[in-house]
Structure formats: structure tokens, C-alpha cells
Length: 166
Image 1: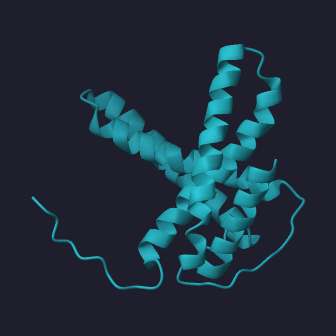
Image 2: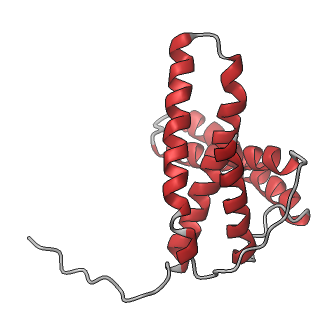
């Protein structure tokens, strides 16, 4: 059966897919940076090889995603240089908190024991609170301009390029 879904005749990406692209690029650039920082310390050859494979895959993914940034609804970019690693560390912590929220939400749907479900729910609420605190920390310091798509995407491009150049 042939698909009847028509492609819209647009010259740019949709806002919602641009934001999904941002989430993926930010997440992967952060982990690429961390993996590259960890690699020299990994002594086990097989684990070292797995890290190298993950690094290669993330680099490929990010290079492919960068090709779509010019198609984002906002085309101009803001450049800023930060040598301070605070934004990286904060984003890494934010990614952990976001992943924790998702993992606990999924775990709750798989739980049959009421006491364990209550424990997961308590942990989920704590993860949500931590995420909010980290987000506010980043937002207040201009590290996560979530209400300014142009700046958000510019930060992605800068972080992806920095992670790729390491």
C-alpha cells in the first residue's frame, strides 16, 4: 500500500522538529565531549573499543544533524566563546536529570508491587525537582536560552563543532 502522506512545500524545518533536533544535538554533543574526555583513562581494550565506536557514531550523527541547522526557522546565529566548562557540566547534569525522569516514568509503568511503585514515584518527583533546579540554574545564567530559538540553535552549533574538534 502506497503512502498518501504529502510532503509540505516548506523552505524550512517545522518548529517542533527543530526543537527535537536541538534536544538530540545538545544531548549527543554533551556525551561526545564526555566520552572523548574519558577515553584516555579507559584501560580495558574492549571497553576502549566500545567507547571509540560510540564516539565515531556520535560524530557521524552530529555531522548529519548540522546539515539541517541552516533549514531551521531562524537562520541567523549568535556566536559567543566560553572557555569556562560550567555550561558543559551543567548540561551534562541536566541530561542526567532528564534521562532520570524518563527512566523512572517508564519504570513505574512496569511495576506491579505497590511499595516499589511508590518508591519509584518518590524518586521520579525528586528527579523532576532536580531537573527544574538545574534548568533554572542554566536559564538564569544564559546557558539555556530556551525561550530564544535563535540562541538555542546557535549554542547547539557551537557545542557540536567544539565536540567534533576535540
